[in-house]
Image 1 (cartoon, rainbow, N blue to C red):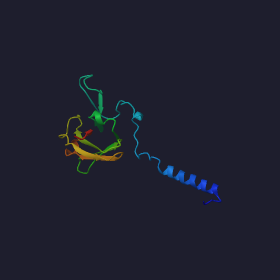
Image 2 (image 1 turned 45 degrees about the vertical axis):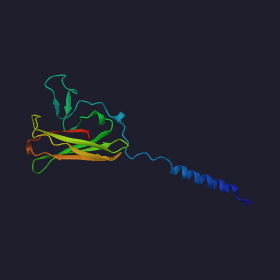
Image 3 (image 1 turned 90 degrees about the vertical axis):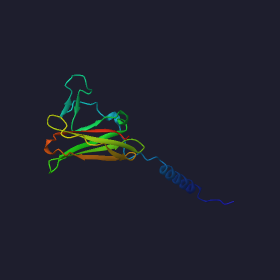
Length: 164
């Protein structure tokens, strides 16, 4: 039978190795975490809005322009819109951009299209076709599109739905 002279040292080494082993097995939280509880109820938009001519016929009463409208309730707890923006190009056309976050633990397909509106909030051109965006689990994707109506475009509204 072999006897070790430094039993305390062996115990210490054993506990140190176990600590490293346990620390290595700890679950790593996903890099992107969404907290839907922090989202504020939709307040009155500060920019341009679409307002129904018949009071109470549309909810919400005012739909904010120059942003994203989630048209599919099934993804309202799966994605968050992190940012939207637009810029006028040298040609006079408008390019819109939206950054979308997949808050789920699985890949997701979403689709987006854009309404480009004139100063009267009427379509300046036909709405764009639905464009598919592939989002990996807990990732960020982007959508962009360009108008063709030149300087007639004054505002935009991006529709977002789950891929079909």
